[in-house]
Length: 261
Image (cartoon, rainbow, N blue to C red; front, side, top):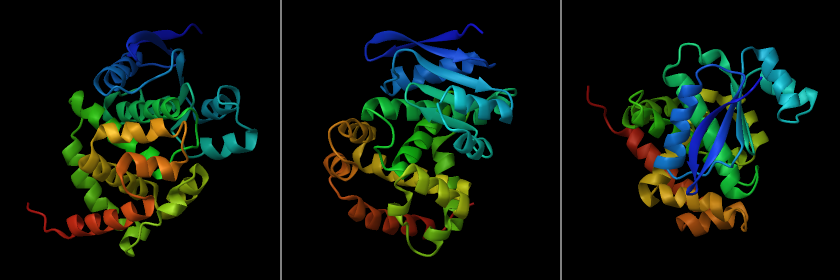
């Protein structure tokens, strides 16, 4: 099938983001414009967005288009609706039919991961909790620009839902066990995906509030030449352990504040 192309300004030039196999390509074009032009995130030339219509198609796509083994593809296809790899995003198109916020959020989230890989010079170099939190934050920035959602509203929802996240409910974050992709997957499956993603969003939101979105981009850019701990210290001025202590205190404080109706 011939791909459709969404034009995107990337690093001062024009490059193609190719959409393969799915509907609602205009939504992907809108997200690409926001990520690259409004937020300054780089998508590599020739980025491909694969949209699959069934779970089985997702599984086959993971093997063919993401070069995954059969066992890993079976595991991911069972629960994932979007997966990113350098230069490509693989999406379950079941959300695309009606359009709307959830589809747009998925597209923005996975394309943010593609941009993170481009900044970092590869995948698996960042703290996974931070990669997921930034992707969620960018997704809701995009929804707000498209009048499909509100960053402030999502923040309020997250502050309520995070209180059900088991580690946070017991007064800890345990970021060391959210650092790798595999550990992150195991924990969010065990402790609740929605609550864990709300936690990562709030952690990224706190970093952006303190240091600006540019520091987030700097962290990922530094991963080309620094390990994650050093890149975090350089970009944000604190070690991950120090930030974890500060973030836990902050989140416990703001979730304890009385809510006005």
